[in-house]
Image (tube, rainbow, N blue to C red; front, side, top):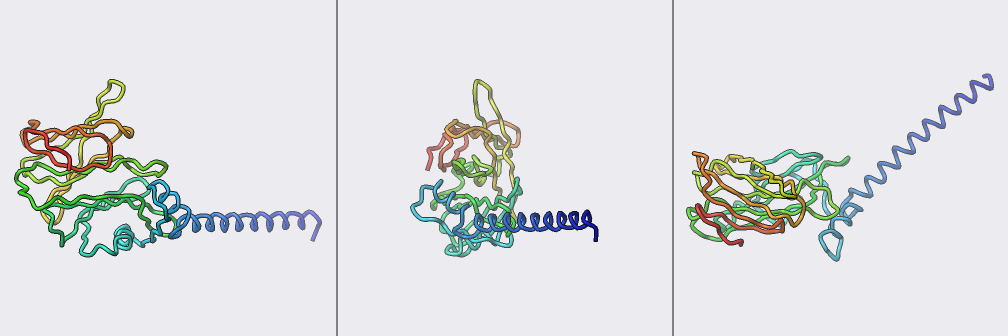
Length: 239
């Protein structure tokens, strides 16, 4: 073997070894980041103001990730899954709840090892006459330092006459109107959600419309962790 060929072979071997080492290093870092109790869980726990680090399991599917996290909450069914960038928003309800309406929203993210819960929240409305209300809502704000599709408002539509829901925000004198997405579940119920484009602390207004396009209710809120209801023709206080 000539000296030149020997040097070329050494360079190829060294390059391959470097690539293999790089792949191993990346995979090792990703595992240390994504494993239960790892770097990602430490960052999330700090952002949530927790004294201890959460140990968030990795699921094989979005639904599995939620079920593992909420294992202590039985009788939970998935009513809708909405794809978003790098993840999935999973809507669930408790089937054994005594509340007249309940909804839980979970954001799970895809990583190299499966699906992992990132952020979520939910509400339960007490035993009241649902005919009094047009819809229920909950706002999930953006969590500082954590990449999520929030802020977001979601809930259930309680009155069959509600055909459209919007969220309006105003920044620097400019009004932004975002249409809510309405989803009919297999239980013949309607859930709704809207991604809010504004930053934390900016007020937003939920407006509801009937089948004729007439506005029949509105409610203004701040972008904080809040839930409440809208009554046809007038405002209702937060819950």
